[in-house]
Image (tube, rainbow, N blue to C red; front, side, top):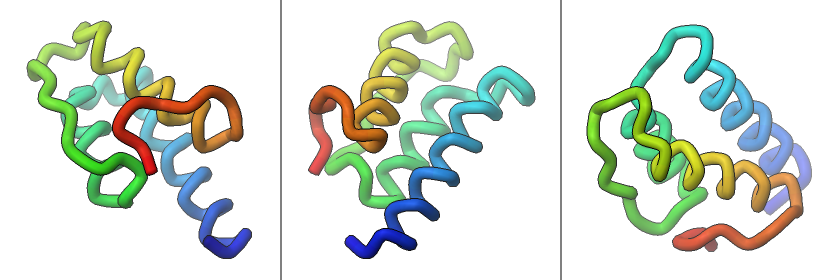
Length: 76
């Protein structure tokens, strides 16, 4: 992946995760966006509850992986 593609993807994902607090969009929607971006290999089935902690932890692991931290499950 080229650096500009990586940076664009990274910025988009940061905006998605920030929107969780601002707009309280569902975590399922965020994770599905990550899937559509090709960041994760398969969608993570979440409840529609904004407070689905497992899904939030999963999305945060993906963000850490993108930033170069730990490896997240289901990523490529």
